[in-house]
Image 1 (cartoon, rainbow, N blue to C red):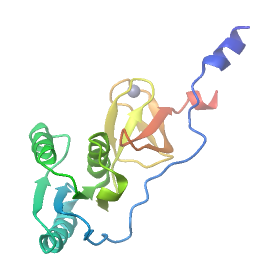
Image 2 (image 1 turned 135 degrees about the horizontal axis):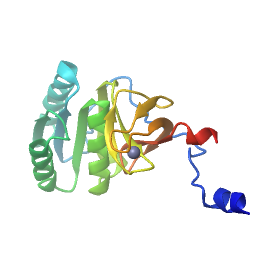
Image 3 (image 1 turned 45 degrees about the vertical axis):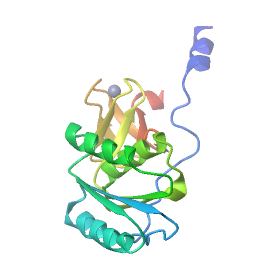
Image 4 (image 1 turned 90 degrees about the horizontal axis):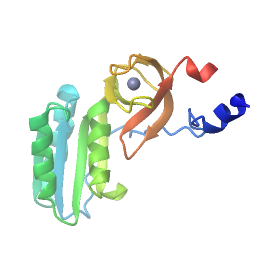
Length: 184
Ligand SMILES: [Zn+2]
């Protein structure tokens, strides 16, 4: 009887349908329907700076453009500057985000939670070595040098986690759960 109860209460992990980010092969052009532009470069090395400059040059030919350069969205001061600039944006703004995969996914999550629509946001990743991982057990989100299908230790609860092929878009992170528990 206890075995039945356990199977009923068990979470459905991993999710049945894979959901992976689809990054464009090259930076998309600036959306000329925009009335103003916010270009965000966050981590991602010199290549991200090049893309941000090219976007800024293009956007300035269409409307008022703000360029924000951040080290990482995890830094308190960087995050505060991003949120200040975002709060000043108006209807019709187009937001373009370029940088490392971890930071881009986290910034996209902040934009979605702020109400940005998919067609108002463009993104490009110049470095895919790190991803945001969400631990299903202790609910911690952390930066990991792995990919979907990989293993990583949780820095908070110390479990060895398997990263699932599932990006929770609103949370901006990949779902991960105990690598040993999934085989039970
Ligand atoms: Zn954990």
